[in-house]
Image (cartoon, rainbow, N blue to C red; front, side, top):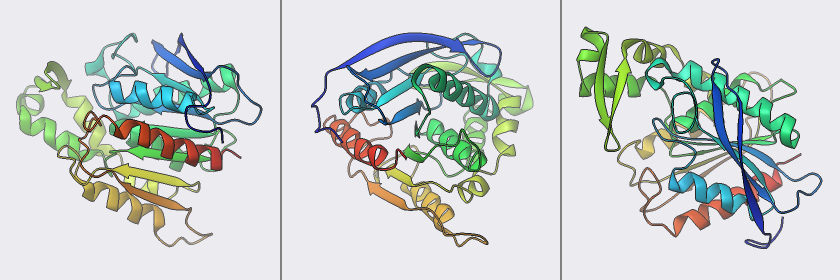
Length: 275
């Protein structure tokens, strides 16, 4: 692995077909020169966030400075991507992730790792569990502040505005913005059993989470560890690492110096498990 900060990097804006019939916007954070056999990562953002969230942008650039190619992208209806956010859900997130992996594979070569923040982490974990025997399966997956299930978000949204369930839609303030949430989105959140997919992950897993996270509690990280490490009928569980990011908030905005630390941890992880 190149020393931290050893390589210059560059970023390129891209657009590609998403998994739901809409064009998605992305950014490739790349080393100045891509070496043979270096990792390629797809980075998924949190619920209502986007590829330009400060933490995602800085971590993506930090990984590129350490020789790793990164695609970070906006899911349908968010950021610079096409589509209507209120029509999306966890299933559409998975479809967009699959499309992002396909694009990265074409543009950069085989995708060796998945990285996701919060709900994007849940999507990355789900995909790794679904595609464990596939030729397009990742060789490593890492989550940042990810939930261990998806139905809690449905409960939270319904509690914030009961109109979503009773009238079919309602607005909820998230991150200082008002978002239209539809009943169908919550119904989809309740359909998925993320714990079953995490239990099927066959590649090395790194879970990074703050004990001080007030949005997705640290208990979720412990449950992800439990699901991934459970005994299996065939084979051994994969290596699973838990990093407690002491004092950090959910969006990794504070303390800001943690982002360099996180990028360094992830770079070492993805370099180690690139083949």
